[in-house]
Length: 170
Image (cartoon, rainbow, N blue to C red; front, side):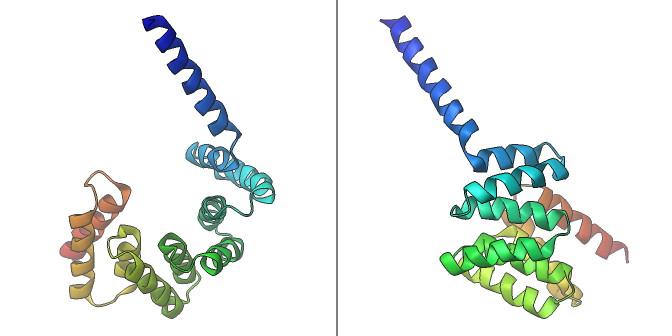
């Protein structure tokens, strides 16, 4: 009886793993996490054609495009997500960050504020806003807000700490 149960659990785990391997989003995510963005982009292009209806696939692909500096491609996918789901704070945040990276800070700030309106605890949006402000007091407040919300070991918290340390040294 005990061995039957263990066998059933093992079979179910294998099935879940096989389904995960087969989904386009997991394939794109796995390629992204290898650190090879060129490979991740190749996988994203393949899978976005098969799974373009998935907001998650579009978001992960947009994130890869943004990291590669292909902001037009990223923003096109994010606009689809926002059109489909206007409350998708992740897409608002990433499209805002893309605008900022392209030098359109006014539009970027507008999108980041929309992301924070939808999710006031989104550390990436707060961090990006902190990077856009020239008001040192406001920047410090935003960075400290990030540190209150984010796990101290996260990349977002580390970047906020670095920015705070740098501003104190000036």
